[in-house]
Amino acid sequence: MTLPVTIHQNYSLIHQNTLGLPSIARYYAEVNTVEELQEALTFAKEKGLVILPLGGGSNVVLGDVLDALVIHINLKGLSVVHRDERQVTVTAMAGENWHEFVLWSIDQEAYGLENLSLIPGCVGAAPIQNIGAYGVEIKDYFVSLDAINISTGDVEQFDNFDCCFGYRDSVFKGEKKDRYIIISVTFALDAVLSPRLGYGQLTDSLSEKHGDSVLTALQISQAVCDIRQQKLPDPKTIGNAGSFFKNPEVDQQTMERLKKEYPDIVAYPVGEKWKLAAGWLIDRAGLRGVQQGSVGTYQKQALVLVNHGGATGSDVIAFSQYVLEKVKNQFGVELEREPRVYR
Ligand code: FAD
Ligand code: EPU
Image 1 (tube, helix red, strand yellow):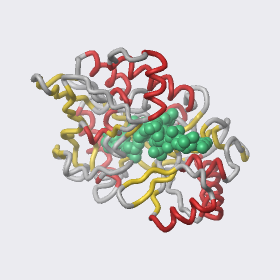
Image 2 (cartoon, rainbow, N blue to C red):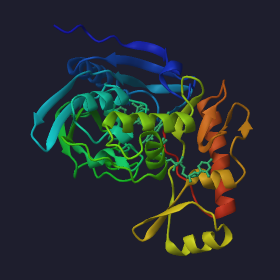
Image 3 (cartoon, rainbow, N blue to C red):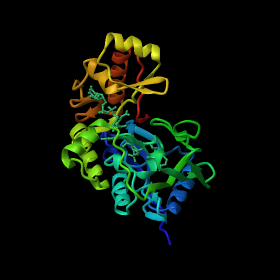
Image 4 (cartoon, rainbow, N blue to C red):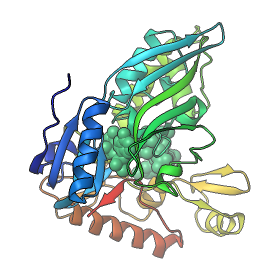
């Protein structure tokens, strides 16, 4: 029998968001089973509370007080559901740590996620923005997810098409925003490793370490971890939410204008458009390593905003607005924030 879920009042989330922002949840529950989750949802319905699902808190900017029921999704479980000579289908519960899931999948001889090693957070949040790194996005291996419809309490399934995945985007940031809680995610991984080495820095680092030898998934995972640890601040040491802005897309005409003025601009073609490196834009605007009060940009990666200690959600938003405006004024390009802001 499951125990009734504990609902806390005025609960501090300072240790549950990687920016380390002080934030009080009016109501808070940690759920370890689907039954507990259903119970928490019933409680919220009775009280007319807004629901805010929280995983690892690595892609949120939290306000001082959240007038909501914050539900920490702590559902655990990993399983191989099918294996043949080509594919291994695996299901992970939403509360599993993403990086541990990646390592587990490699251990199961199920490949494809190694480039996504060391992305902070939980499995349940991964589909929300279709997490990606080093040339891979989860949509490449995603089969389906199960989610509870917050208004009906029913479990519904979404396949890859239903999720409308895009660059740092899904239906859960659009039409179905705030309507579902993801409880599990299923991936079809490769039974035979085929390394995805299109990302220059990763290829260089692997050939430096391993020469021409046949690579293992663990070696790729380790190389990704090494690159990430060199470039990105560890939230345990310095508060951050990874890239604070998406890399913006511009049309051909804008690209030509920018290229004339900034011949060394970093950009990649995406269909008929160009994706600009937002980190380069911020850096070139003279904002790498700057600090205003307790918020700044990271010295080694201008796209990452950091909390030097004592910042609030409003401080982070105000500083990000300053960065947005500087970039807009200098390049005529609008940046869009990546983390979800809750005030
Ligand atoms: P949270 O921050 O807890 O939540 C994020 C959003 O998802 C919130 O709106 C929340 O309500 C919602 N949510 C969470 N769980 C659920 C659920 N079960 N059901 C419904 N909604 C839910 N991202 C990348 O894509 N690529 C990277 O390379 C990358 N690098 C990063 C590096 C660092 C150092 C940091 C701090 C972050 C990085 N991120 C990256 C961003 C972040 O790790 C991902 O977005 C991650 O998926 C967030 O997971 P989380 O569990 O922490 O989500
Ligand atoms: N750059 C600068 N100055 C800077 C930062 C970057 O000139 O201060 C230049 C770099 O030299 C490089 C280019 O910008 O030429 C791109 O930088 P990087 O390779 O570090 O990648 P990114 O585009 O900044 C993206 C993702 C990351 C992901 C990496 C690796 C977005 C918004 N960010 O960063 O995702 O890990 O690529 O694939 O797409 C996240 O989403 O939180 C995140 C960390």
